[in-house]
Image (tube, rainbow, N blue to C red; front, side):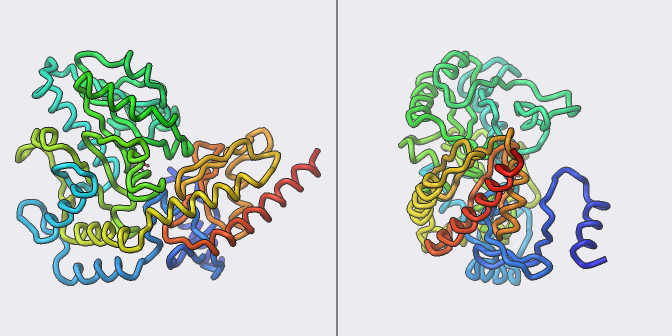
Length: 409
Ligand SMILES: *Cc1c(COP(=O)(O)O)cnc(C)c1O
């Protein structure tokens, strides 16, 4: 058995089958590029669901990590460390919020936001005990813990996992009137992605978020934005909510916050919201550890130093415009913000996964979202000439698919 077959066979035998990976075995990465076990090079258009916005093995981030790793890695929050304060100060400055609670994964940051919102509702809005409601949007994706799964609307996320956590109300994404109708005196928060990632790069009407922010303010409801995928430059602004010119009460960050190296997440909020936490009320063994804090701070600084948000806006617009110029029968729609683009594939013609397999043969790695959408989300360090190369490969791959489709009929 060759090395590739061995890796695939071993993983299939010993790893739970909760993913359906493409048949490529990756062994190393540098910048926007990945190499497989046979030495073939690919452009990473997936970026680990936007966790790798800085590119693979970024030299400054690896340096920040190794320097810190030699100094001190994990101490727990039982003690102070010299890296956590500066990291969270930077996060608060960037979000214009007051305090942060460090966690590791995105789902944990969302769980933290939910706990904060409920406590805030009981203590500041005087909601009767155990009656707090949180409004969420349909087709949401906020992670995989059981409470978060409780308010998912995707059947495959939920099947046979019940009983679920109560206290959530689902409204259609992108509809202000639905939010207005759903708010009751027991509503403590509206928890939402400013643009939906796993639902297939869904971009709401331009006035929606601003109107939601106004409604939340009128009714004393916290606006809590999950920017775990959209944040840190992905959509061409540092945070996707900046497209709407609003200020949320709380923000969840993760993914790219770890610089493509470590899991680092945080819930960042106004002081009044964060002050509901007191010693013993919430925690995480690894959250806020010195190694994660050093990498997180370096990731934020590097984002600014390389002007990655601006690059995302400029090259994202360029990529989107180039894609709009293409015309294929199996592509139904193309949309995007920054370097974050969704291509709707007509499932009657071909599956999105099959398209991803053809792209892979042409040196482009991507993975379908929501079964029918191809997501293009390269590292934000990508250059124009590399985008041009990608467009050429996409075009060749799409031509091949179109030819195959027309010969079938
Ligand atoms: C990926 C993601 C999460 C969950 O992050 P994990 O680190 O996988 O727990 C939550 N919300 C959004 C919007 C995401 O894209």
